[in-house]
Length: 181
Image (tube, rainbow, N blue to C red; front, side, top):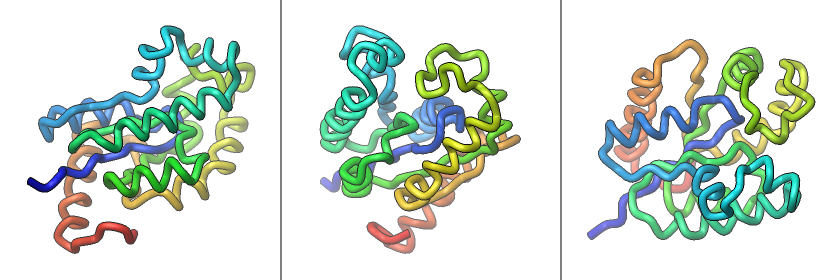
């Protein structure tokens, strides 16, 4: 029996990865892996506390280890942490076991979605549109290089976004595209 591909949702924080992962799970009837939540559960502490106590490098190592485990899973929708694309190893692992879907949004949209959150350690003390835009610009090339499919989420319902993703996945599967964009 052929192994089903995973769907990895990547993108900056606040682009809708968690929401869309849950919607795709319902729509496709597959497992859903929330990377950040799974790390929190396994470590027994919030991400902000992991950053504070052990640093960002430790957290990034936890992400990589979790991706190794997820690669063995079959047909899951995976909501990735915003920084998962910072390592080539992570991108290669995602591409080997599935399709990478980049969700995008404008900095103003991101700010509106995350401004009341206390669980965004990379934004602590920098919760403003300018900082968000600058950080997004720094990561943009990494996100785009990793993506097989890109979907803008600004001013769209979760159902509309999921429809776009499933249509693009079907097109991609018809074309038989495995490794190429």
